[in-house]
Image (cartoon, rainbow, N blue to C red):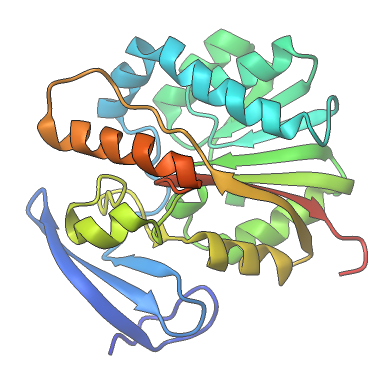
Length: 267
């Protein structure tokens, strides 16, 4: 039993496995309350690490295809308005959203990534710092996006609550997350490519993500698997993962997912 408290308040957890990365021994546990996985020890908010920035820049066109798919999903529910991208990285998603008519704003905790995003989008369009530390007026945004970000946050529950407070009436909260409940995650265990214990503090499934939203003032409008980005390479393990996704996508099963939810005015 692990006595470290989950963000849901539960202290009891089940150890799933241990994994060693970069001379650090990590432990992955599952909360017996909400079912969310947790990495211990954890280093919150280390998104956009320096070694990843070059990769994002080199593969911008490929990432834009993924971002276009996400934006298409969002536009089924809102086609205009003020958008906040939390953890905006180099600003590629906001650049695309701006071209399609959205009034954009980004937050990025990594100073190098934030600087590059400012170069792309404009100094006033990106705030360099942690979302948790920024004062934002209530009812400020029509859409808030946390794409591959919530798993890095120190306290996802407080993040969701803050998002609700700064969303306008009927505003959208959009999450993109690795699926800890996917078939490949269960099959590969500690070797799952999206585990990333050096960066990912929390490990969500579709079910516990929807529950987190619904219990904190949101109605889930859509939840489905995404088509992830697989860079061209000759790594046989990555090619196996790619083959798996293409096979399982026919039955709507994948390794990452997105959830679009709406602020519920009655909760």
